[in-house]
Length: 278
Image (cartoon, rainbow, N blue to C red; front, side, top):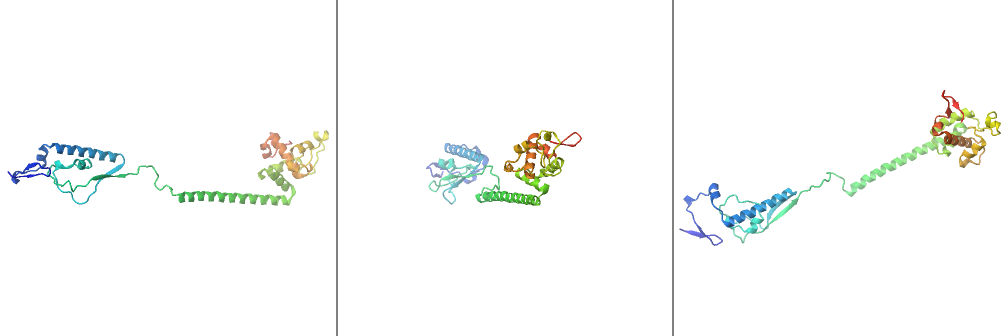
């Protein structure tokens, strides 16, 4: 019977054409040679490694280092190095011929999948971050200018009141010197009108203080000792009847003795809401 040699030098009998029925079922029943079993084991291990690579977030791609179609060879004689680097299982055991001299080596190529939690569209560009910071600084600067403008307008308003003189002007100037809000002006005016009627030279000659020789004087009707203790330091050299100095002494004494709430309410009052001197 004629025969031929395989590339490994093994005699392989030639089966006559009419009796060759290389179906899958017949092939599956044919016992594997020792070389084929080693090839299948290496190939299964390579497939397991490839599956492990995919589970860790990377895709493995096997790339040949040579181009062109592979020659046909017997499946039992595929080199062990090729089987260990391949993830493709043979679909049947039909002879496949190749020449080991024309085979290249196959190398796995890994493609890493981005798995971080970086937000899509986050402004990581330094120029964008600087632009955002610059915008915030511009907003802050604009607010500072607006605040300065408001303060300038308020100062201009107070200047106008002071320039006009009179009771309102004296109150406005006194509150400015004490660095107190001008919103207290109506309350201070109410106290002054109850104490002196708005007369900076008013003197009380009939109360207990007058009986002791220390009559109350000025817009806020303070006695000399109270005036000296509570007048604003910047006005200490002025007379007790100086309207601005007298207001600062009376206001500071009332806040120190009865609290800012008493000043805000326009002085002390009884249960009927009537004013009571301080």
